[in-house]
Amino acid sequence: MTTLDEARAMDAGDALAPLRARFAAPEGLIYLDGNSLGMLPADSVAASADMVTRQWGERLIRSWNEGWIDAPARIGGLIAPLIGAATDEVIACDSTSVNLFKLIVAGLREAGRRDPKRRVVVSEAGNFPTDLHIAAGAVGCVAGAELRVVPRDGVAEALGDDTALLLLTHVHYKSGARFDMAAWTARAQAAGALMLWDLSHSAGAVAVDLNGAGADLAVGCGYKYLNGGPGAPAFLFVTARWQAELANPLSGWMGHAAPFGFADGYVPADGIERWLTGTPPMLAMGALEAGLRLWQGADLTAVEAKSAALFDILLAAGTRAGLECVTPRDPAARGSHISFRHPEAHAIVQALIARDIVGDFRAPDVARFGLTPLTLSHEAVWRAGEALVDVIATGAWDRAEYRARAAVT
Image 1 (cartoon, rainbow, N blue to C red):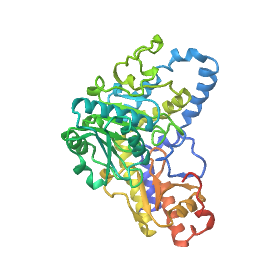
Image 2: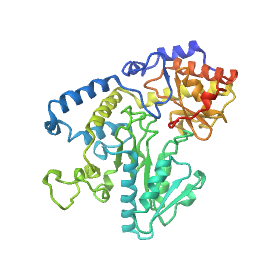
Image 3: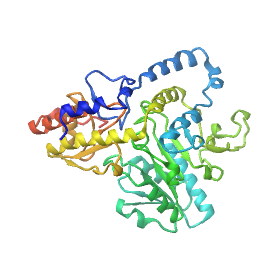
Image 4: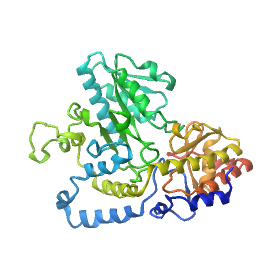
C-alpha cells in the first residue's frame, strides 16, 4: 500500500508534473472524471478569446483564408502521433457518432462491392451504446446489411465469410478492459473484414499504434483525454491504403474536391479531406487545437507508466474499502480509468463529489474514476483513495440526497 510520503516522492520524480500547471484547475478539487470530460487547458482560454474577439469579431469571414479552412487537417495532424497514424490519415470533424456512421456505411458498401455476401457488421454486446445505436442505423442504410452483436467472448467466433466490418471499442467505457489492437486487427482481416476501432477512451490515455497494428479505420472524440472541451469535435482515421477506395456517404460540400466551385455534382476530395461534410465549428475547433498542443511536450510511455502507478494507488484503497474492482490488473489489458462495483455505487460517487472528489457512475452499479496523468498528482489520487475508504467505512454515502439521480450521471 502506498503511503502519503511515497506518493509525494513519486510526484517529485514525475516528468509530467509541469504539465499540471498548464490546466485551469479549481482550487481544492480532485478531478477523477477526465475520462469523460477533460479539464480546461489554460491556453484554451486565451485561444478561445482570440477566436471570438479577433478572428471572428475583427477578421470575420477573412479568417477562413487565415487558417480556418485548414483547421480540420491541421488538428488531425496534431492527433495523428497520439494514435500511431500519419498526419494525412486523420481529420478532425463532426462527432464520434457521425464519424462512426460514415465509416460503417462506407465499409459496408466497399465490402459488398468486392464480395456481395459480406453484409454483416460484428460488434460486442455492452459496447458504448452510441456505437451500437449508430451501427443499427447504419446497417439500415445499406440493403441487406445486418448488425450482429455478440458477447465479448464470442466475437472471434462471429467472424466469418459474411463479415464486412468488425467494430470494437479499444478501451471499454465501463470496465476499462483493452483489446489487443494488433491481434484483433489481424483476426478481422484474416476473416476478410475491415477493422474499425473506437478510440474514445484510448487517445491520450494509452499508447496507440494504428499503423503498427495495420488498422483500417478508427474514430475517437476530442473532449476526454484530449481536453478539447465539452462537445469538442471528434476525429476520424482512414489508412492511406483505403483512402482512394472508400467514399464518404455524407457527401457534403466540405468534402468536395472544389467546395468553392459550387458545382451541382459531387466530386470527392483526394485523401482524408473527402471525409469532411459540413462547415467546421470553428469556436470548438480552436479550443480543441489549443488542448492538443499540450501533448507536444508529453511522452506517451511516461503517460502509461504514470497511469499504472495511479491505478495501483486507487486499487489498494478500493480493496481496503471492500470494493470489487472490475478493471483488469494488467496495465497492458486496460485503459486509464478504474471501476469498482457496489450496489450503492451512485450514492458513493455522490458522497465523494460532496467532498470535491469528482468521479462518475455507470449504471447499474459501477463507480468509475479517471486516472488522467497530465492533470493528476499521485498525492491527489492517494487522498481520493483515503476519502473512498472513509466514505465506505463510515457509511457516509447512506443519505437520501446521494441516492437522488440527476439527468447526467
